[in-house]
Image: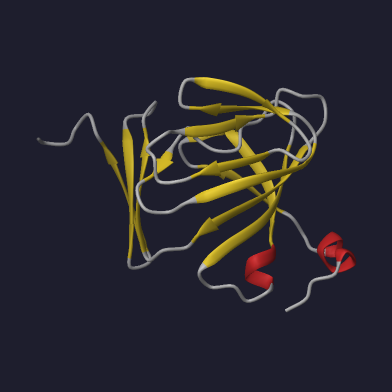
Length: 149
């Protein structure tokens, strides 16, 4: 499946706010969905100044990566802050290092976000002390402070 630059530019971006972080507001175009990909997600994302990409998190099973097309921001990888810009690549393998991007620049950060689409995954949100279980098309969030050991 081929998507031209013209077709991508004409796609309507969908604005979303993360359910655990009201500062995590991004607009995206799901290129992978339009192209018929089922097992990998490919998204063109625009992150406005002052917003975060997501809630600080890591996945137990799904890998994801980011390729910056334009703009500048700060990526938080574990406890390390890294300035990122055009041409930079961030890989998030299964290593339990939480990550998040904050657009502290003066223009929109534009990037490609690519990740697996497994039928099951566990995502931890360490700052919120929450865990998301994704399975069989369902999503359940658990408050880890209330979980029994």
